[in-house]
Image 1 (cartoon, rainbow, N blue to C red):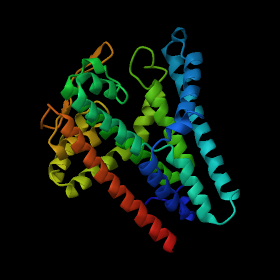
Image 2 (image 1 turned 30 degrees about the vertical axis):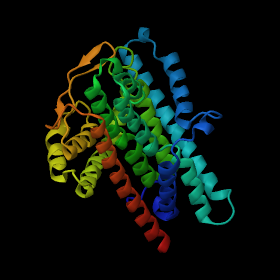
Image 3 (image 1 turned 180 degrees about the horizontal axis):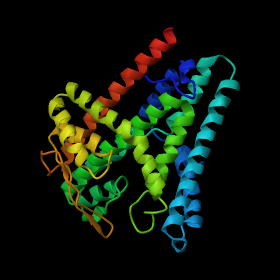
Length: 338
């Protein structure tokens, strides 16, 4: 694990325990709905700040160049503020609790786990599989919660493909990348990454409203996810090695062939790994609002996916999660045993 960083994580072996605690809590508990009915989710609270900044500063009358620079300033200011907040929280965990470093590690893991999305992503995608077994309307309603495209334009196979694509892409953005930056930089890295990802999800669109103002957010998110997305693809290939029925060799070949063809510089890597491992074809033309996007197909397998195929993708996702757990447990055991 890469721990020698500006944050001096190499001097903090308890970070390995914090990583394990955060991931384990997310797997077991997910997002506690009862808590977020009382207090806002950290990402939702940050999203409110983005909304306010965008409403005040994204004025088309200013001209494209001015909007680009405003977007740069807003993006950097909010990401740096998020990183500073993470640094402050980490500092508190090291000085407030009595009883030893391991308590600090557990508290840091507790703070971090709300910024992971392993369990939540699993449950949302499973809801699509259940909806497919019930009715097309139920599948569309479940898919609408996790995809940006128009759910009413999707048939049953389209809902199934959308669910698998969302599972693949968000496995990178919502699980692997947050763990990666937590491992590198501790809480400051994790919180800053979530700020980058949230900014991109809110203003990083290539449409008339956001193309200029959200350019910095989109480019920064692309850069931040460049390595984690490729690590996610390799992780899915590794999971295919041990999952019955999955094909690791085909997954790897599909990644090499099709990932660079995706319109996103990053999303194609986990999508191609899932498609190749399970014999699917993902991507293809889809509708976002009134716009039709002619995306290329990723993978050369079946396009007519169904509920059972979504469940197969979830099984591959769970196997990959077990591999993550094994790596984190091994790292924690190694560091704590020294």
